[in-house]
Amino acid sequence: MELLELEEGSPVRAADGTDLGVISRLVVDPSRSAITHLVVQKGILFAEDRVIPVEHIADVDESGVVLSRESDYKQMPEYEADAYVEEDRATDTRLPSNAAVSLWRFPMMQTGMFPMYPAYPPSGSKAPEEVRPETMSTAASSKPDLELLDESTRVVTADGKRLGNVVEVAIKKDGNLSHLVVDLGFLQGHRLLPAHWIDSIDGQQIRIAVSKQALAKLPEVT
Image (cartoon, rainbow, N blue to C red; front, top):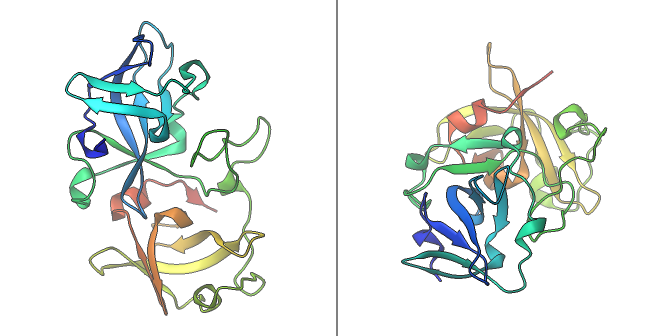
């Protein structure tokens, strides 16, 4: 199965042949340039767009996508547009060019019921950008590259163009990075950068795996 063959408008069927709809976009993990989910457009069967992990795909052929027999399509979560940021496909040639691309914009602070799919914040809880991360002076991690982060750490694009500087960093209980707060400079404000948007951390520089436009679409952190 070649995931890059997935196309916008391709039919999606259950293992029993039930027509589920067509692909409207793909969800990508930018740090790996990997397709993680496909979004099935609402139609006769679904009242809302649904998100399906690629692990539930049994086959991709000229007639479309077929899900595995173990996949319960009725339990797939709805596509919450506000939880994603649209990415420009032209910024990364490793991404599929034949479908719209979305990026999960929240830090992966918890794991949902589907593989590689973070759970939405429970009803009544604060969204991740409303939770203040630890400051760099109190953040603790066993990873040397994270200990080097301070307010002089630059954040750059894939081609090395400077975007801003790290302001705050949040470390998860397991010692791994959750997210950063990045100062984009004069009049542009601060943005919460989830760890899975990072391509590499090299000394005093963080290289992101997304476009500047995608980063700017994130809500401003005050």
